[in-house]
Image 1 (cartoon, rainbow, N blue to C red):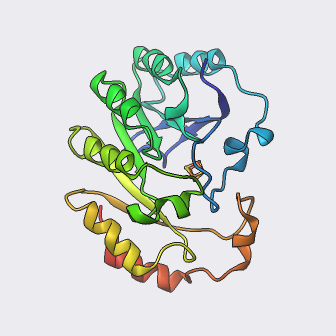
Image 2 (image 1 turned 45 degrees about the vertical axis):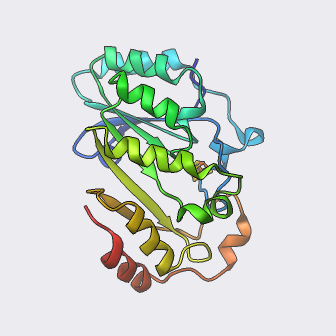
Length: 224
Ligand code: SF4
């Protein structure tokens, strides 16, 4: 059974070009200090999971109104039952978008080969050499690289995206990311919002890019 911590019945912005429902899985193998979803990342903050069956029943009733289902987290690919869940969603006739941190390329590869996903959005957190600092855990850089290559060669639609957090990412860092994503048709820069509940609250009190500074970075590196 997929561990599900949240469900949004309708979204026009999470799946490009599709009206979609959004499933939020519980648990993540990263600890990004700037993460805005501690209740989906830290086990001690998990709410009572939502039953997978409830969601599938809802989707069955919305087959005519919705086109897609977004599976996001947390990190969906750490769940052993992800594949079985996606099969059920595909059997209901929905397009599937997967949001991932790219740390589990073998899972991604399998889902792509089995045609269980139609769109992938991968967060690229930092230049590879800074990955462990920015994600708060020890990272095998080759896995991140492998996921990027898999997506680029998959033939399915995709986007890469980076949340631009000033204490972690400079203009030079974004330039380095843009270089190793060369060939990617879509690279989205997202501003960091220094408010709300985040994993490391001390980040709320340090300097962040102003909106003008962010727009400047976006103009240089964002492409879609
Ligand atoms: S921002 Fe980082 S810690 Fe939060 S869900 Fe995404 S990968 Fe996990």
